[in-house]
Image (cartoon, rainbow, N blue to C red; front, side, top):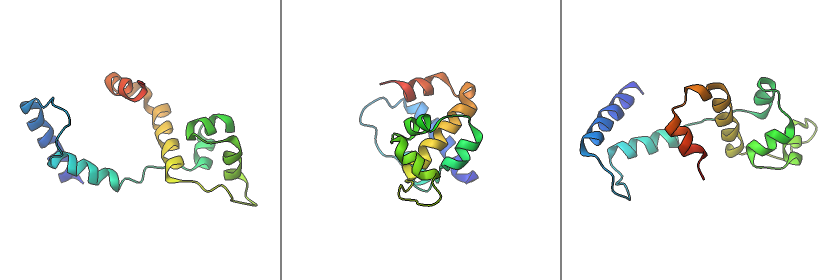
Length: 117
């Protein structure tokens, strides 16, 4: 992993020198490495872990996960699990945890890209 990150840093420096600003961006070695890293990324947080860490309502969790409160309630119902969690739900909770935990350290340009419509 370390050598992969070092290679990405080298490629980033080369990209800065070229000053690529044309769209669509070409898929170069840099992008191929990032796509591979992302495809193996298992970013996720269970609703139970998120709920134990943050004092929020199930309505707020449903908002975060883009689903209904009924679905969220199903995740906590131990007698029946008829509302399966998807990788998307787990990823939403992990990203929200990251934002809640580290908001102040996230660079402003990244936040603007994340929250712009």
